[in-house]
Image (cartoon, rainbow, N blue to C red):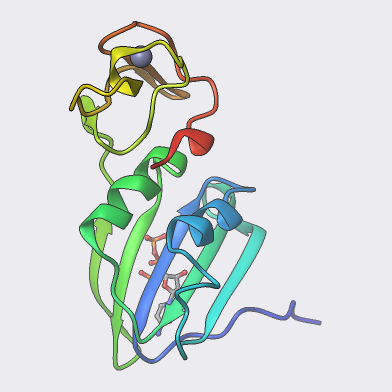
Length: 151
Ligand code: CTP
Ligand code: ZN
């Protein structure tokens, strides 16, 4: 018997190839359920794909903001953002982890100048991509738990 699969959507966004286990973090970035309005959201975790296991999130009738895509890149660096229009994949974008990450995650060091009253945006340098490791530009501390530092 064929496995029960999540259905194709008519219009909206499919976030595919999410690092397995991170679908709920993606929902958190998208502020779901708080911001869900009336669109249907579905998530599957740990499904088989051509390139190993993955999570998938589908949001009907909504396209993502650039700021949301930038955050998703940090917790799912291999994700694709598929815009679906009338059942077809109208656009496919790979998320991009930039060389420097500015204003997206906060430094975990309470004494860091980016956490002071100074108007300084948090800024991180990418040390490695697989796995993603980032270091604060100001205090040089590595951010261990990137998803918990998301602003
Ligand atoms: N999808 C969907 N509803 C549609 C069309 C596509 O939910 N009407 C989903 C597919 O299930 C898949 C993703 O959107 O998870 C991307 O679709 P597609 O590009 O057709 O899949 P692949 O070719 O497998 O994509 P990739 O090469 O990026 O893995
Ligand atoms: Zn710092």
